[in-house]
Image (cartoon, rainbow, N blue to C red; front, side, top):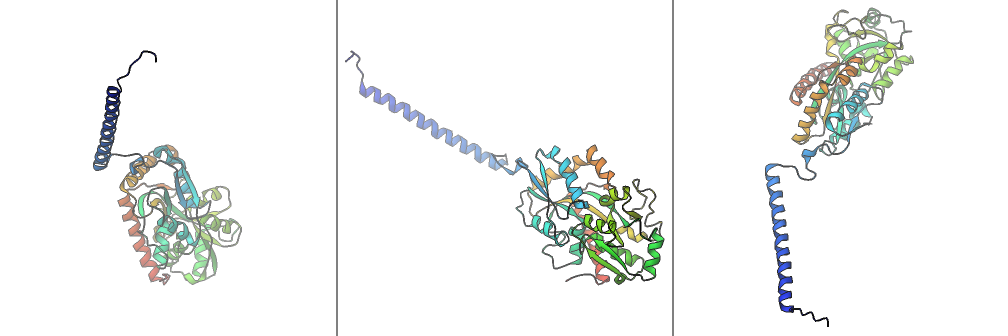
Length: 353
């Protein structure tokens, strides 16, 4: 119509050639991408959401005891410091019950991806498994990422109590007087520690009446309110109450006196050095079967936390001893303590089987 002629056969050949070239190019692109993915998988290079990207979302840190106790305080210090080295925030969740067993077992049964971890404590990870063989986990049913601190214990009373010194306490114990004490639950170190102390003093353990609470914070509050006579507590958990004059410490379970309570004598000074074995600790645990890259990430993170001035200052300020250990060293330390308590509790007839 406009004097313009098109050779339809030639045009069709050109079009077909263009589409054929595009199809070849697409096939080649797909082939190349597939080959690259195969190579990446073979040599372990990260793909879009590979585990080596860990962590790529917030991490939940479970504290198995109530707010205000040593487990809770330790968890919140970790959650406040570790994100600087992890690149992701951490959320502390308190899952209480059964002397820390509920929260511990929750983490044990969680997906082993590193996003649900445990603020591990000496009580629910060592003391309870040593005492109660019927709980749903054993002391070594977790991936141990690292010990972070040790906690001296102090024997505390109400300042208004007639017990003013350790000598007063010893006299009542030796005379066979009934005394009521609080703990964070059956099998926790706040409970078994009293048994170890009674054994060291050759005291009648049956004269000491145990009242368990859900967490060390509530156990300490029971002393403050006068509900019980005494409690064996983590120094870190009660340092604030000691400063405020709400509690009075009679002895500390360290070889040397502590700077934050310089007037409180050591176990050796009062004549019972064996009480030094009553020492708490905090660690970071995960479910069994955590992948190696998650373990490595946390090993590196805890070593960096060890050098972090802020975390050190706050940890020491609570009366704790900074003691960051590797997964292997952590396991060896916990195993040795577990065996010692398992033997002592069996001797005193306190094991539940």
